Image 1 (tube, helix red, strand yellow):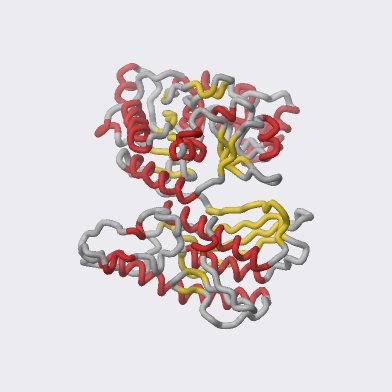
Image 2 (image 1 turned 45 degrees about the horizontal axis):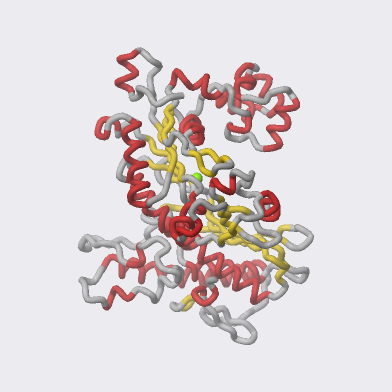
Length: 478
Ligand SMILES: [Mg+2]
């Protein structure tokens, strides 16, 4: 692996194996934690962990200073504290990360429209065609890094390869390293050309390949297969015999660097969700619903930052004995506001027995579609407009109050007709849709009748309870 000649023209001249495609994988370094350090310079150089600090918390992201102690994402916070007692825990701020993510994706879009986002902080870019305009892939990678550093004041690593697999593994190889002295810079950009793929892949552990989780890895290890080279050396039929036809063949191909998965622009995660384990079990339904609203707000911010709308809302409830209940409802159209998501989530929760208490609650949005593709209202002949406050991903702490918050209609500047129409139109669609959805959920799950007052109000959520308590996302955001 090296930063060296690539691009179809170079390869053709030099006689190297051709680059049938050129894929960049861009990945922010310790994204959430780096944003926290950026916003609070006192954290610079410290072991910072973004995640829950409570007994049941989990590490979402951590700085390289924390990684030097063995702390990793998805590790229980208690374990992280044992490894690194001086670590500073910081609560995650999804709206802030989504805001930075939106700016990151603007940088990607300046390089190529063929961007496949993976979560908030990484993406695949197919730059095969962009080479004619922007030059060699290393130039594009360098330009992306320069823009990320200069305009976001954050770091990212870029991998360049002929396939998504190679690009992803190359970006990992380009990452900084954690050491007891703190963060040691990585290469920043790593290119793995077609002729270098085998040498690059062979020493990697089998876990580096997609689809190799702990269970598969254990089976492979038991067979004495620990590296990608080991996998490449056994016949595909042996892997098929062990893992089944489709996974076995796929794994054999990946071990040989064969990955036909295209970069699909705009492809999103199958769902966007937010779940939390509570510090102590929640037994009170109105408390649980408040958490659901808060999580719906977080999900809505991420939906809007990704320019998608969700058709399916799912709630997940884990009880103290770790039994999990999920409830889903699929709508006729897409939604992306906190109030609409929360209305459906709360209605779904009504059908779940929480008598034993709730250890974990999750709210997820699925059936994601590009916001523009799903638009039901067409506005032809509207003046070109710049997006107002509503277009700002995760704009402002209140986020969910997309309904009434927009003061732009009465502002001094020209009225943004498109934005106003879009907002009013979608609000009306949502309200009709959500009311019907809530009714049908109650019918289907036989939930208690809780009155017919509008669930969705322009100020946020109004959930009629027996005592008539009303609350909105902005009040509950912590
Ligand atoms: Mg990352």
